[in-house]
Image (tube, rainbow, N blue to C red; front, top):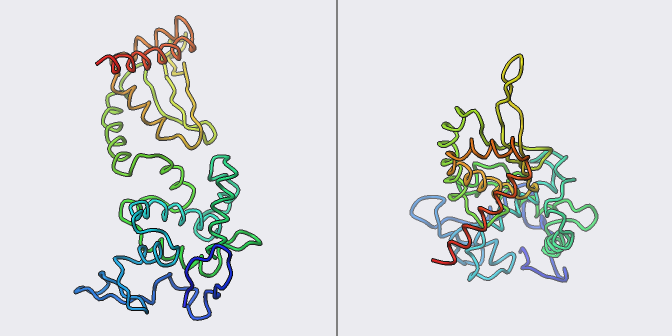
Length: 277
């Protein structure tokens, strides 16, 4: 039997004593649905589960069913964390990246939680045999919207936001449509990265003695975990594409700082207008 969650670690049986450590967690469950593989799934104690993830969430981790709405996002994060710690599914370089954006306490807490749950080793932080089987299960049971994104640090960065997958996809579609118009403009805003940090930059057309050349007139940088904020700002700019030439002229005339201050004024004008309605 796989024991339930024991915070102290006492009384836990070693995974693999009666489980195959190379198979996904929950492989012992039996489908009783009208179609093979469909729920309900029956465990060895005769309990019915809507999914393997539900059984893992409630029975193995001891987490309350009332918060099962959080289950998918947390388990996707857990899968990415375990994949980075394991090193078999992602590049080893990702293991040295800080996946908690410098929050050491959160990093220590999550690792302590996985340690107490018996999913990582205390010595090297790598997944235990059960941790690897959980990783296999989480990868195998990904929803279609999550399966489009790689397991690992990229998923963590992309999903470190309150916005869901559908909201991010909708914003990306809006950006793609408006960029087709922006690409033909002499002065245009564009997204980029400097190192690993997301950036929005204003590119202008400079007329030189020889040939016209494009150069960067203005930039704004976000931290590595704030790509959605960068994308939302870029979408805000695309909605005001008719102002781009005037804003470029402002930079040419008064410098890059003048445009940054102008954006700040616009942002707070919007807030004041909203508050007065």
